[in-house]
Every structure is written in C-alpha cells, then in structure tokens.
Length: 292
Image (cartoon, rainbow, N blue to C red; front, side, top):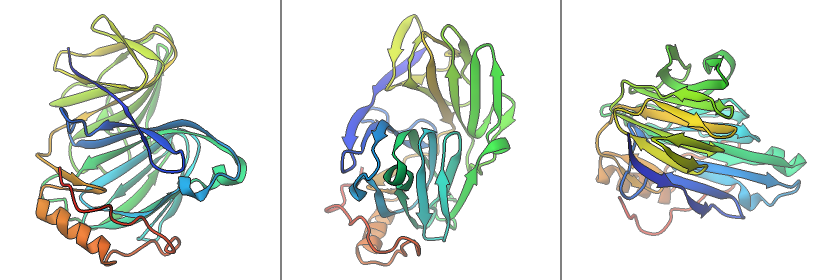
C-alpha cells in the first residue's frame, strides 16, 4: 500500500536553474537514509548561459551526495582535488564525512548547449560514520549493474537489489535504482527494507488502482511490490534502513545540532578549504542557522 504521496516543490537555485524539491518534506523527512532528493530539470540550456546557473563552491558534512543524470553533463570539482564530469547513467558519489567542499559547473552547456535532467540525492551517514574522512568516487559501466526484461530496463545506482550490488560504497543498508519502463510493463519494487519509496521522474504509472504523474514520490508500506507504467516512464526506486534522527542546516547534515552550528561557523570564518581548481568564488553562508 501507499503510505504517503509527496509532490515536488519547485525551487529556483539561481539564474533560472529550477529544481523540484521532494525530500525533506514536512511530514516525511527521510526514506531510509535518504534525507534529500532533488529533481533537476528537464531544462534546455542554450550555449553561452550565464555563470549564475553554476553551483559555486559550497561545503557539506555528514552525508554522501549522489549525482545521477538522465541527460546532460555536470562538472564536479572538490577540495580533495577530484575533477570529474558526470554524464547520463553515471554516478558521482561524494562522501562528505567530517567536511568537504565542491562545485558543480555547467561547462558543456555553456560551450555547446545541453539538456540537463537528473537527480541529486543525499544519503545521511550512519552513527559512528558521520565524521569519517571525506572521499569521492565516480562510477559507470559495470559499477552500475543493468538488466532488461519484459519492457523494463534497470540501472542499479547504489546498494543491493534484484540480486545485484552496485559499485559505490554505501555505509548503511540501502538500494537506489533507475527503471525505464515501456507502456504496460510492470516493475518489481525491492523488498526487505523498513522504508521504501518510488519517484516518477517521467511519464505516469499505476499503483493500488490510482494513476500518478511525473514529479510524484510514493512512500510505500510493506505490502507494495509492483508498479505498472501507463506510458513510457522513468522511475527511481529507493529505500533502506533508517539511520536515526538527522538535523539539516543548509548543506550540512548531522545527528547533532551543535555539530551543524560548528560547521556553519567553520564555513563563515573560511576554515574549510575550497577546491584548488575552483577557489576564486564561493556561496556564502545564508543568514543565521535555522536548524531543522
């Protein structure tokens, strides 16, 4: 059964770069360890777009960011020295731990134009791992196991499901998959975790006798097991074991409000290193912390 329906809320990140914010939601802050879920685009970008659409250097703690694209390209640079574009059906997995900074630039779009469409999720780190050393990894090909059966094409982005395991190092039990569905096809929703959801990125689907459109997350109960496509559709499936209460301020996630305040003070005072290859500007700390 469906426990809750969450519709994306549109947000402008600057310069006309619109996203659909799904998690956190007032009545459902997390699904398993997934504490943040943004749907980027689809957005057609003309050559010569303004740099105000880039995401300038900014900090994170206590989470892993998971960037996955259906189309387009984003250039990642971070304070560990990594410089790595992410392209369709690839994953940039960045674990912030005790602290990292990075930027996300639309360089391909600026030079040639682009159609940007994808998902950025944040996975909260489990107790005892929130302050691990930061790291970055890029995954493509065999690191994202694929399957094709009955009109369903799947890509496992992270964790374990469908008898497969993805290459990214997840620090708590979870699954995260992208499913492309032909009209009339049926896809299995992984079971075995306390919390699960699906997000309709494109198209429309049927569950429990009702129709749901793109931009909708369905938080699932224990009985939900299948979803049917009513047209060509792209669906994200996600879930895992809860990691406990997490607080969020801006780009920081922690089980401790004091730790969030410390991270904010560190960024405001310039104590967090910027990416060597992108250190001439940054996003300033917004206002006074409103920790939630």
